Length: 80
Length: 139
Image (cartoon, rainbow over all chains, first blue to last red; front, side):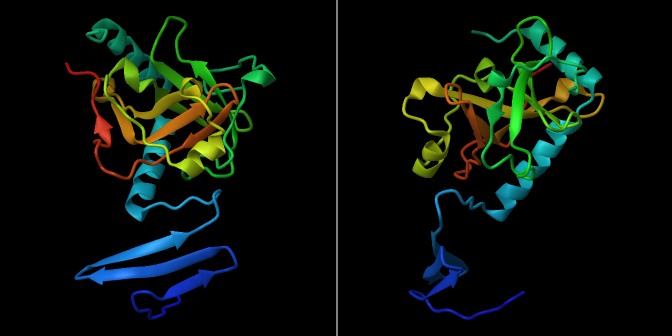
């Protein structure tokens, strides 16, 4: 991993289109500003990993459990 | 061919995901298939190019009245949204093996679809307002 030291107000360029700026440091929290192209996704790591895992789980449900869950829902019908 | 067996898919029902899904970025074309014949909030988001790739999704509004999905401008642009009526929201569903009564809706990574343009995008919600797991079936 490349390691660089920056001060608040200083920036980094990742290629031509991505700018990463250290805005402020307060105790353990670092505020970062990102200028990225519109079509580029930026995720917090924990959110990214969680959703990736949930997508995987949504792929894995068996046909049998799928129909059972659908049937359960039907027998309950929501309140509205 | 899909996870639900052989299905006829009409090309104009294909939804294009310009960025794929989280963790599945190279899979871009999907169709929505009903899980059952009868009306059900559960659907299968089936990848057109990979028969083994079908995610179970649900209409969150069948279970929740107040679920707001936050869309930023770049996301609106990607989805070419000009009107709120074009927007449909789905969430992925987790069914623990052999415990369908513990089914959960994953509210943090909704899949937003522009039904007119047939464009889709998974939009992680970062404000932490919603639980990642919501149990719709309380037994």
